[in-house]
Image 1: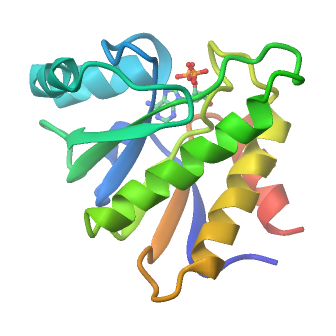
Image 2: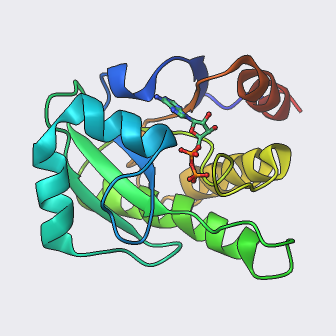
Length: 172
Ligand code: ADP
């Protein structure tokens, strides 16, 4: 069943005018490739300075900075698990990324949040399994909220494969 508060969009996450975009960061928070590199390039050095000040982030946790030159208001940096066969708590750690990011958004009064498919690039988490965890965790968070805090979650897809994957899952 499609969810009224969830959208799937094929776009570059750095271009979105939302309250928060979520970055698939690494533990050191010093930037990297993939979506992390794109966010730091588009946002400018201010984000990296804030990240250095924060000092790092554990897998499954989330931290927040401004969004520099991007149209979003904030960047939530979360560290996804590196895929290591699937028996090393990867699913649970990935769930934590989504839950902790949404919790942080809520604490900061941010109501529209965009997520890439965390861990499915360099970290090699299987895409469909990751997308399923993303959708289930986000639906659960939205449905369990006592007062509606998050009004829109966007699964932002860079490529057609992810777009088809999320669209399919949300129509199940
Ligand atoms: P990880 O290191 O957690 O595996 P990656 O950045 O390598 O993260 O990949 C995470 C996801 O982000 C992938 O689905 C990739 O296609 C996507 N991605 C990369 N650049 C962008 C972008 N500019 N906007 C949205 N998604 C992006």
